[in-house]
Image (cartoon, rainbow, N blue to C red; front, side, top):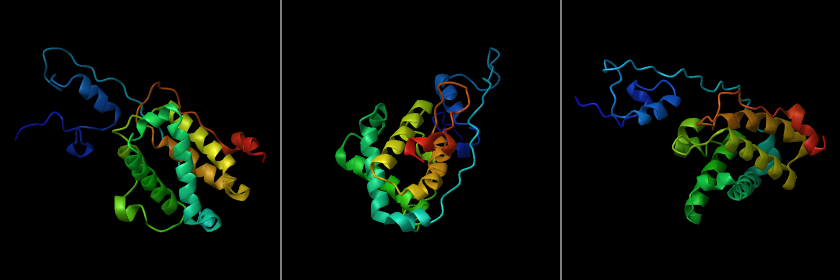
Length: 198
């Protein structure tokens, strides 16, 4: 049976961490074991993911599906104006498909039924986004634009804490490239609530 050096699937037993993919691509033709020289595998410290408290259905009951979809669309339109915008498909129809898919996820996560998983399967955010490089700085922009979205769309004040406590740790799950080995910056509700005049 021939080995396929391009098969970087986690299922083939060769990948223990996403950080290994880049290393394998840098040395595609060098033997993994038994080469002419000593080969050192770099030390790897991947992200420690915090717990993600998914919200109750109170937000869905307060907003309804259409307002959630409008919020996700607004957020994506803000992202288009930032450097993160280059990560989205350039064609308007493809962009709309990406936004609709994200909106499906938010609707389901907030209590609107299995509109995402019934079509797309389990979210696995980091895996789904892996072909699109997302680093810590992109995540900072993503969160900043959500903060702006929540303010400008007058998100219900009584549900802000529950929503923020979900999307803040959730956003870490999208990071699939590291630019440094420092801990991921956290934006706890206690630190950002003043920006909402709470």
